[in-house]
Amino acid sequence: MNILSRVFLPALMFGHISGFAQGIVNAGFESGRNSGWTESSTGGYALIGTAAFFASTEISPPVVPHSGQYMGRVGGFAYEVNSLSQTVSLPATTPLYLKLFVQDRNSTTSECAGLWVGAQIRLYVAGQTLYDEYLCYYYQTETWVPVYFDLSGVAGQTVQIKVQADAANSVWSFLYMDDISFTNSVTEVENEKKTLPITLALRPNYPNPFNPSTTLEYQLPMKTNVSLEVFDLLGQRVAMLVHKVQDPGTYSEMFDARHLPTGMYIARLTAGNSVKHEKMFLLK
Image (cartoon, rainbow, N blue to C red; front, side, top):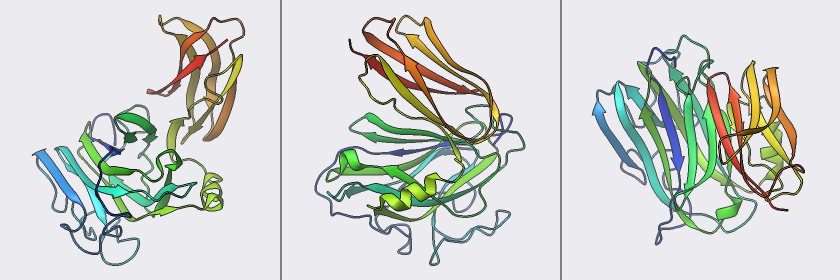
C-alpha cells in the first residue's frame, strides 16, 4: 500500500458484552458467511468477495485457505469501511493468547514510509486500548503467518472481536485470516517471537509507574530512520533516547528520569513517517 494508492487500517477491537458461549464460532470460516460472524461494509465499491469467505483466485498470487475450503477477508477496492465481528466469552485460564493466521495482498509500489503504507491493528476492552500495532504491507505476506495477542489481562471476560478495515490511501488491499483460536502455550508464542517482526510496535514501558528508570521496548519490520523521544505534558522534549538508522528487529532502551519531577510523560517512537506513543508515569 503506498501513499499514492489507497490502503486500509484493519482494527481488531474488543468491548464488553455478556450472554455468549465460550469460544469462537466458525473460527475457520467453514460454516459460511452467516455463522458466527457479522459483516459490515459501507461506501465505495467492493471487489467481489469483500468481507466474504472463500479462496480468492482474482488476486495474484492466489490465496487459498490455511485449512479447509474457506477463510475470512476484509478490505476491497475504493471502499470506506468493512469489518467482521463476533462476541466471545474468553477462557478463564492464563496465560491466554488470541492466535490467528494472516496474509495480505495489496497494490503498493512504495516502501513503508508512513502510517498509510500498511495497516493498524488495535485491541480494545471497554473502550481502552489493550494492543496497538502497525502492519507494514510493502513486502506483502504471501504465506500464512501466525499472529498472537496477549489477552491474559481479560481472561474470563466476554468481549467483542472485530477486525475492521478503514479506507486510507490504496487502490485495493486485502487482509486474509483463518483458523482463529486461543492458546495457553507460552513456548509457542516465544518461539514465534524469535523470528523478525512484521509490524512496527512500541511496547508499554516496564515498570510503570516507575522510579527513577524504566525500559522501553520496540520492534522494527524494516531498516529505517528511528527516533525514540520522551516528552512532558507541555510538549517539551525531556530526553532523546535513540536517533539513528536501525535494522529490522527488537530493541530496548532505558529511560532515566531521576532529574525529572513526578508526573505523566509520553514516549514517542518515530520510524520513517510512522509514529507510536506510550504513556509513562513517574512516581517519586
